Image (cartoon, rainbow, N blue to C red; front, side, top):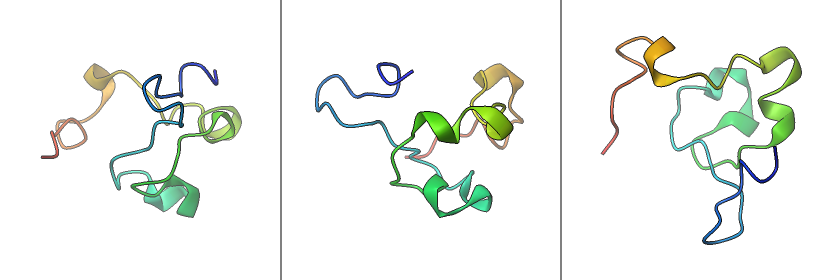
Length: 62
């Protein structure tokens, strides 16, 4: 899981890059790193394929 969440260019964890998950807590904020414990267990449905998200959730942020 750690390898999937790592930016292989910088070596740092990738980050949320959206405010869509902030209702889950401050660790889910826009620039916060995605950690394995945040997308497993009780919150295992947080990360899902784009096709399963609503049209609003699929929007591209520029």
